[in-house]
Image (cartoon, rainbow, N blue to C red; front, side):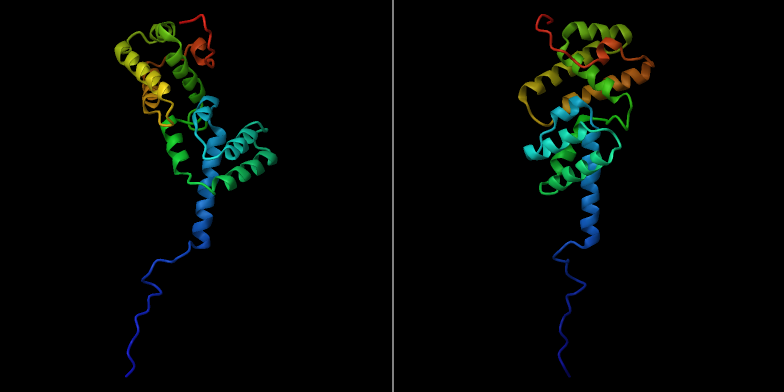
Length: 194
């Protein structure tokens, strides 16, 4: 009687990814590319890309007309460049930033509000608390200070800025107040304002 050999065909892990797995991975990176293209200007500036060519591909795509074939092809190219790198870091960065404009149409105004609170000093804080006068002013000042300190460190992780974003978003939802127009505009650095 012949000795039975152990067949490892189904017991071992495949050495290569299947075509379906490659396709799923490519689709996930394409979705990530779409998210990056849809980010607000401030959020996009805070991303650290693995290579300058990848960033340039996204800059070009962001400048193109929405829903055009040119933009679609440019985003496919950006996703192709991105596949050569580990995209997990970019995913984490996007998660730490907060909402995208598609998920929350008010996100860009909230990002501008956050940046104005971080850089605008006491004037911006007073403007915000005048709109929502029952907000916890000390908590807000602490969150702003932590986010400002975080910017000085120049790290890609911004948990304090994200916490500030969530806090002001929840305060606005709780009170039903609108973002003051002067704080919803992109922050402009005026050297005379302190």
